[in-house]
Length: 621
Image 1 (spheres, rainbow, N blue to C red):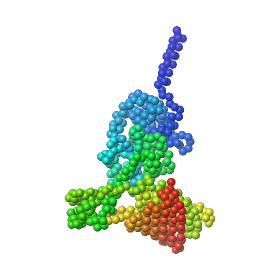
Image 2: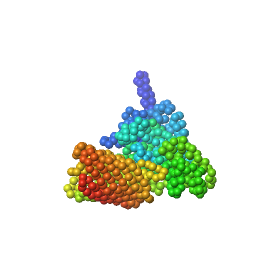
Image 3: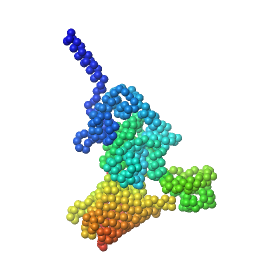
Image 4: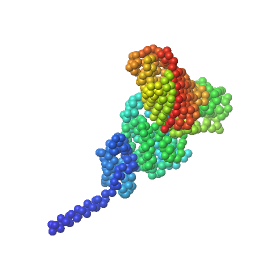
């Protein structure tokens, strides 16, 4: 009997064990290496070795203690958690709905919906049918926006002319810097990952107010052709990322990079992140999205300044003079100067002046006690004119930002410096200078990062580093009767400088401020007061300072770009002397990604004259 009893117990235990095993899903070997799983947990291959590391830097993003570096451990922990009894907002199924849905499809697990009140309410509030990628044009006055910015807009059903998309929600990723640091500290910490980056949801009207109305940045809206299932997957993963920390890096793991990862999750196989190497520039990432066939249509939303400038440009010179006088208070909105104009012209002058006053009250902080009464007087005068439609909104530029030249540039040139022949290689990872093909970029704007110029002198086969530009920014914004922006420049790096005895590589910091004025179509004149500082042991006192000036002309067109002028510096610390330079630069754009260029400089320095020229080819990748 004892033997039979023990045998019965063994059979019973075996039956129970078999039943338990039968309820465990069969996990295919290597499922944790599936690209979808790697995308869901943001794993990237380690630079050295065969392992993986997640880009997430928040412990709350992982269910396994080893999840940061082990896709297998995180998958097993997730699988166990989503099968555990219990529900509610803190359950794994509710915290990670995208992971839950994918694992249930892969393993044929029951797909019964989980009760997730917070997530369900969030989805209902978003009320999303389609998703739009929005690109805000570059803004040179802020380090975080120099290359532009991207975010997603979640469009509700019924997306037509009657739908107010300003009420839609947006998903964006940005550095959580708060108001703690100034712009220089923000740039430094942003480059080296000193800020946490968080994914947030905000109303679209807040974004439009910030980018279009305050920072005067045009917006491009790219509606994505995601299916309903792909939209659901994108939102589910956005919920998983909400309030989770991913360290922010200015050049690569930035706003645009995170959105690419989100789209990769929504539509498996797009592999947008494969395009990222050393940096992820927002305009480049938009180009990759377009090239992958993810965009159904594009809409342009001009900024407040673009709209006002367009209205003013539609006025004649005399009408602009009247508009300026009204805005400055010299002419009344119902005065004789306006009354003498034809009805249509009078209406357009009143419209343009009203929009200009509103713009200035926001941008230039005109006093409310001045702007409010004047705005009311303009509206009253306009209300007396019937049957005249306002000037249409500005048309979209013929070339979008994502259709401009690629930002990585390699140049090969040959030339001569003071009778020494040389060959030069220039590598510039980003972004644009004044002689690059201008279409798709801001006129008069230059932004270069990590540019390297290396020369091989042919007379003695000497290889020299000619320049290393860490960052160089130049903004030549034209002034007129209505707008008075400053033109400015700043640069930091290392460059060859003449000590009077030899040319040495010296660290430098330079800057300048002044004005620019349009002289005709594509032609502008500029004048800048400059300041330079150089540091090197070969200088008499180890450093030198020089105030100076730079006067020139710039012409930009789709086919040819030209810049010429005169530059003078008065070095006054190590050894007092002048450095005067005449320069001429030209670029012939064979296409948006191929240009021929030439440069000539004639310099008077240390009581001697010397010339330098070079010519070559630039390719954009």
